[in-house]
Length: 294
Image (cartoon, rainbow, N blue to C red; front, side, top):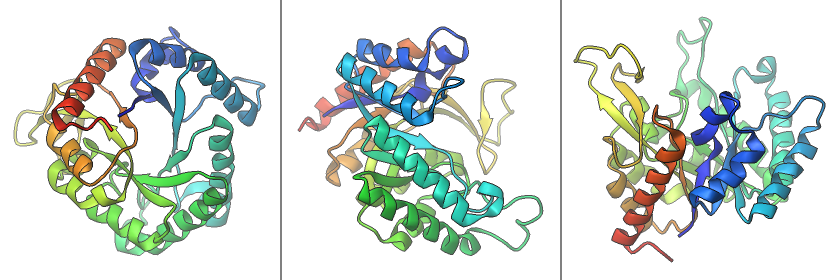
């Protein structure tokens, strides 16, 4: 079993000016990870995106750590001013960036849903054909480049397991699968065990994430939590310290035959280096418990 960390987990260090994106690579290696995922990249002023991606790849090679995944935003409804063809072309350009990074997988979003009054009489059912069209076009292009694309249960509108399943089965392409985030189903108030069970067969990649959960029937926290779609409250947690059934959901994925990277994603308020180190220790302990080391 190999373990990676999302750059998002350590982004607080970049935001505070303590590290650069390039320096996160050495830090991930120092903590003990085998790989790193980049959740978007911030191109230095005056530098070409493809050239910067190549620099990140070269630094990973120098540090002896694998750049395993590239995750970015997208919106097949409103992206590129609502021009679907233009948004597809933009994402094909991001596939080229993914290739320059040396990553074999790319997650991109579907949409945040309808807005600005369009949501009246419009919902997931109305959006599905457009989302399927967009995802299929991008994954067909990515397949030619040797890159697998995927949807994550992310962004509220497409977060439910039945919606993820509908998009994947609608695209119906061997190059397209799911980035299964074991914690994110809670953002749509869905039981992680039930949800992961539904989509485990489609898993191309895993995010291991934990949350502290507070019921919406209780007093709303003053700070540190965000609201789920249904009005409950979540706060990012060190993996294994929160309420996500980490062991059970990872066992479901193991039993389904997943044998790729497990990638830690931390979004809590604790020190990110300590949180990532503790999270990695928990992942290794779970892998030993499940005998999931092949």
